[in-house]
Image (cartoon, rainbow, N blue to C red):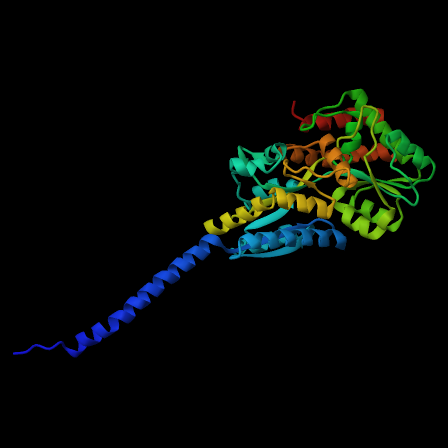
Length: 412
């Protein structure tokens, strides 16, 4: 009896090459997908916009981020970055909304002063940098962002304080606080902040500090600081603003001819004043040059990312600190200080960058806990400063009360 393969077996043999082809294609597709995931992915980035009505400032920040992303995509073609900008007044609300829905951003660009609040609300993850990643950032900046041995973010750019003035009314910036008073007596209009933390640069002109600390003043130096504030407010041409943004708007509108300025305001001031905008060092006090507070724009990481998203977000943040990106950013914007210590900028060709670098080196770089302590000082110190500025109380009466407030927060 002759046995012949059944029809079913014949069909199996006929289908086998096709099945093998499907398996091969499937394995190839899997390898392609895995390679794609290894090289790319999708992350979301939320950028905090700092100036309320300065389109040039936000436009500058937007362009800077767009440039970094464009460069990043050239080396990571399979990476997709979805990003949005939110004003600082709405940032917390937006972040809460996204986190409640499991849609928290993978990466955020914020101020260093935001980090402790974000950590307290459980909205950010710490980051541990490799030796090479740390080498791309000035060591002092990395150390300032560490808490309990962990880094809460990666520095992107540095801001500090300087003087801004209208060249149409003032050919150059005054070099001392006494000279600033003399200008006011000549009816040059001057705008100053009023909170203790924003008056820090004046305070350090009477009470020199270590570059990374808050130190108690001597009783006599504290009185000198308060006497100068009272003297300044006696000048009709000097005004103290509770909202520092009013200083920027005041210089733009012509209400002020000299202000204490933050270098992140420079793009909007330049667009509004053009060649009339002058920039200079903040005036020195009797004890020496001022030590303006150093602030940073920080990359920090959300808590709802997958491992792959976290790695891609980290890659983007560290990419932005390399030599090429930082040099391009500094030269293009001209209003920020790079965080990468290896950059040799042509300071003679860029006097504004040289000025900002000088102010940075003179400045006070506080860690996160020290910044928080300084911010806490504002609430109890403000009515005391107001009493002196307004003339309701003398510096001699207020000085011991302010010293007691300082002693509560300043640790020896």
